[in-house]
Image 1 (cartoon, rainbow, N blue to C red):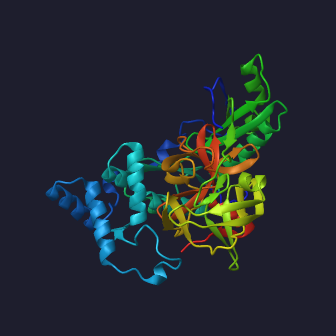
Image 2 (cartoon, rainbow, N blue to C red):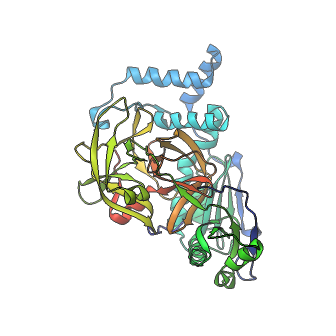
Image 3 (tube, rainbow, N blue to C red):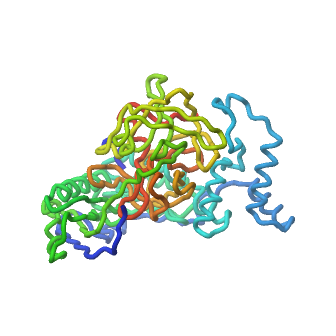
Length: 458
């Protein structure tokens, strides 16, 4: 994934998909150089060393209690017995203790419990499926930075990882892949880098949304197939939807050998700004993370861009367990090449590095992610829907005038959630937008760097 910083839902079934493929050096779904691809078998990969977790499993079996309860008992007992240094909680105590079980912080375990509940699986299975995703994201980010002209993208599955390359698989990629605890497929000969695929997607999106017959559009791409996918909302009714969809396929993209799929939808995107939640509430929106200017100590309060555009002054309110409110003023709002972002002043209150991850529950933001990979599980808190989790389905999506959006695999949000935080453990991922293609979507928080701000972390 390039490190570029600039860059409602479907209410009826998709009526038509037009897929046109030009014969050019751009592959469809087959791997033209499979002989150069590499698979690292799961049984040859390193496994996490988690002796404490294994002991908890053994104790649960001995006591005849669920594993989930044994984990909760261990965390609460350990937290009660330890003293937390004030330096580790510079903004005061929070609801998640600074307790580790092997390599997993209590905050991560809490999110794993929520993911397990959302997906109907046990905590142990959620740990196996998800707890290695931070390692996966680091490998994906390092490969994207090291091989920007060759890296085709990354996808995390429950029990495996996929990394693609335009040509041959670099030796460094194999070295990094050997650090992951699952099967790794390193696909060679994709014929495109993700940077090229992203540029093709942006070009196709601008061509479609610039068409006079189009009211809105959402564009993404699939790193595994090399296809650019456009969902277009027309301004009016047409007699021949097949012809209308065909007319929207950008000819210049086809001439360049890009596979383009066009689908007509009733609604391409729908911001959720009726109410707000987030960390705290911001009138009709939700607040996200507090921000710090990169080269000074100036602090701001982040939320969604369409929230900022709609109202210059808002009232921030803590959750009921804390109480208190203050008036905040819009400093900057943007809906465009940098996604859907805004920030306000902090009013009369002192900013902290904590955020509400559920009603009346706080934790620290310890780090901030880049563009998350497909398959990554992330949780979200919103004023309308509370806390819930989903999986990244599409990344670096263009939607209307917005770019670099992230779209999840399901709809877990509602009106009022706009501006709220997306997170996993102590990592800040993004700021909630609304829905794209009917599924929940957010702006990656790293895009605040375009304004020389970043999430304020511990």
